[in-house]
Length: 455
Image (cartoon, rainbow, N blue to C red; front, side, top):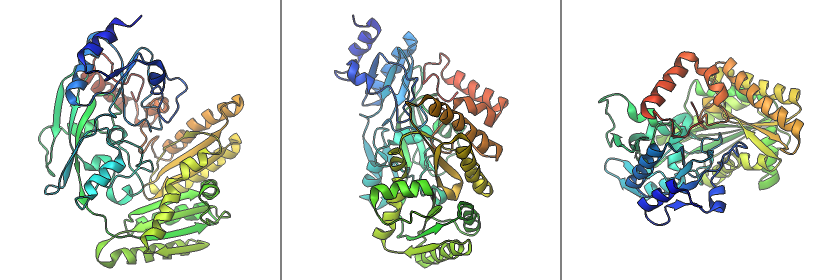
């Protein structure tokens, strides 16, 4: 027997927008975090425009139905985990883009993939910098929901730095326009920034105005291997104290060997760490900065330093770094962390994670956007082994406690979602936690938007 509430919603929307087929609905229960506590929604709704999103949220408010917004489903903290009896609102069909080369802006719907936006603006000689490692499969809407970063954010900033305006549908179905194609705009409270990183708990973003840059200059790449993890991490502080590289990435021994297992590109399997750095300054400064980074790596005891201005050679190492997560994932199920610390504490964080891995008898690989202190510890475990799963879950929290104890954060770009929510109050404190709740209550008084996530 069909649910009369969902039947009413089906009647209000075009054919095919509401999906109730159990097999299809089941495929939307989890994002990439594979939250084992995911519920079973009554339907998946795939609107194609703002008006249809408004219809969905008016219906959901009237019937007090939970709504979980979802992008491409590549989230790593359970932010798009479905809830029992609710609906999943997928933005995958919202894929329009308009590029304005004069103002260097693009108006984009949230369902476009990051890589598709990059390609569309590149046709106009422009560049959208934020570049998560999953840029080929993650959506702009999801990037905004978690304020995603990426490999080049050490120099160019994260998603929020490129969001000039939004159209967002609130829980009651009201559509609001915030900001716009203006580089300077301080009229009113900074509401646009409020929604970036809100993980679908305050509203559903249906359109975004993005700031673009001229095409990225050609870069010089420097790759260094180390026999000491601490030396590799300490080199980061020296480099960033003088220059701002376009990329400064870290891989540990586990990730180096996992990538080499798959790509067979001749990476040094004996290395304790590898740094992949790049500089892209115009007018020759890029080469000088690359030379400086090579000198610093050597000063900190690098066993080998390789420099190149050849784009293909440099990109091969960038690909290796981007491939680290799926390569390590081939060794077992993963609990993925996203902790960050101030740069002077980076070496202590990585050393502390190594100690925790030994204490819990687990493989934990660490990769990092080292230039801004954002690390991604990858906890490898066998979900069929109850004791190993218990140890993995324990160390998941211990790593967050370690980061916060070093003055850091439980998440730099993946979001809090559901998996990290128990640790949020411990980082931001009770006063800030209550302020978060007050904002949530003001915009979503019935608590229908992504219940159980973030707050």
